[in-house]
Image (cartoon, rainbow, N blue to C red; front, side, top):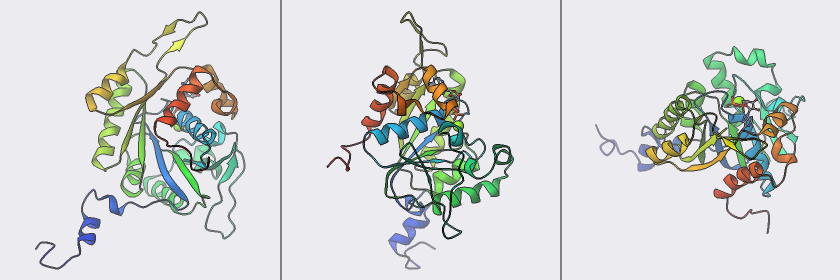
Length: 279
Ligand SMILES: Nc1ncnc2c1ncn2[C@@H]1O[C@H](COP(=O)(O)OP(=O)(O)O)[C@@H](O)[C@H]1O
Ligand SMILES: [Mg+2]
């Protein structure tokens, strides 16, 4: 039996087709969702998510950040937040404001050890809460720090949430690139628009001005060429990025006009038009 013989509307058929974008839901109070992903932990996904969010704020957008890394939330530490989110109706959560960002993380509610041992169904229900019960206030951009890997949690986001663009973080070495490649394939299968790759920890410049390619050179460039995906930029190993993350004082908030801060701003400018709040 085909769709025609039972008189299904085109809209309905579109909705139930596998991989259909129509089933994906927007997030209330948010204009654009940018998802930061990496198939591997420890490549700087959270650091970049936080600093891109602050860069977008500096460009005059209203920005929120959702730490969806249920297994290893890092927003409380990276932004120095120890408050718990409030709820006026016992159902919807009010994001916490810090550095001009609206922030939400599972780490605000449970201690990190508890978050680590969550099982699949609990993870999915936490994701549902975060995508439907947070009172984001009129955001231009919500930056989501996605869970690493290609497991259930990531799949839930890719299949159910209307992500406007996914950014894949990788480091230059071969293993990280192989993992990133798997992440990219999953986004492609679930029809998520990939903005491009950011290569993190691309090089280190020592005090004498010499650039060292500690993890190898040009790996992400090669991958972007092979897979025909944009390389959005490279971010060097920068002690300030690490120190800021550890202190809860994000680099982009405190540093203006350094080579690294300009690279991060440049990545944001690539994908933003003049800010609606400039006029
Ligand atoms: N470009 C960078 N330069 C220096 N340190 C970095 C850089 N990117 C990330 N780090 C540090 O590397 C560690 C892992 O980064 P993190 O953002 O937590 O990774 P992930 O979220 O992918 O697990 C953190 O200590 C962070 O401060
Ligand atoms: Mg992280």
